[in-house]
Image 1 (cartoon, rainbow, N blue to C red):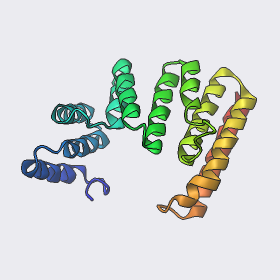
Image 2: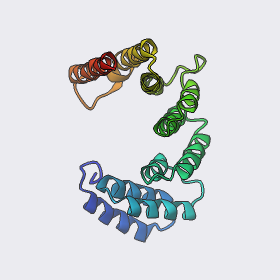
Image 3: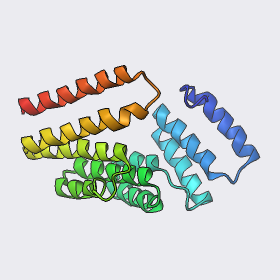
Image 4: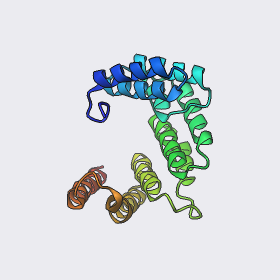
Length: 199
């Protein structure tokens, strides 16, 4: 509750109490790492992720990979995100989120072909159950096309992202009224098209 309400110091205080009672639970360390990450204490978060892995080699979290990318240790970020993907082969949403992050790192490094290839695994027509993952993939493909100067592809990918988001993703969200979500993402969609038009 404290983590969700952004009272991170209090959250960490209670995680420490929990660890004192249940020291062999690696997931408490992962939650603590999340709190440090959200506070901007990246090094402290990395320490907690390392402790979690030492305690339980199968404890895996995507934020660990993201932190290494922020620290510009891309080799380790890639190793960790591949590990996350492999651990979530049976969990479509988590697996696709891993592919999305991997493609983002590749995009970040200018490896546009590799980034696009990674995303093609998410939009496989045989696996259309994860609409949110598919929307994220189209969004990323839009930016890859933007960087390549392939503007028609770019517009089409952004349109695919927007259509799936409005029709399939937003109706399942309950954190905000649907109309607010729709207006918010419609504004972003037109903003993206404006950037494409300028370029």
